[in-house]
Length: 256
Image (cartoon, rainbow, N blue to C red; front, side, top):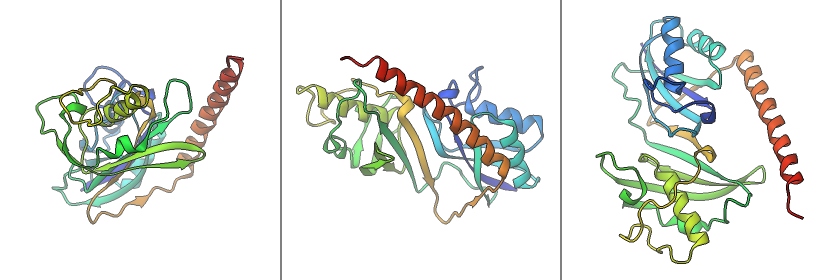
């Protein structure tokens, strides 16, 4: 049987996503637990996020005859900084990379290193375009359709959301980088797709999150395990402690 699983991870805790790097990657960490416990075969993941990028919802498929909730229970109890939270059974030829759309969000921190980005500069990326100015070229087709670029507030933090049927390597970070340059430099071209502009600034990875992956006619079931909830709560408290510590440090080092 083939299962489609939804999972989250803190990208800053890993050396990257792809397997076979010889370091602590997201994919290698999952594979290690699958193989150690004979949980399943043929791990295939949807999005290979950049180093430092986190996911609220990435997806993968595995083939297994074991109970899927038992598989998820073992994964969640064995893995650090990775949480499996959704699942469903799919057909044996299901392709995890054939999605309806993906949604990323980029957090805009209120610090001196980030200028105030104008959403109108990012709205220029909506529609079908050749994004060769905004990716690391690796021989793939660089034409993509971005269906939505929006801004919103969550817990008094400003975010930019991007929706498309697929993204290229570093694409969103270069798009944010363009908007940062527009905010700082008047000479940055008004048309991001002109020959005058080419990948000048790559925005930091740690503020980018893969928020959602949607498939046609796929309904997920949520994982309901108290042990997983407690694990996430411990991680949250640890992060909250560091967040408040760093806020105190910013106050102490503020120019007066």
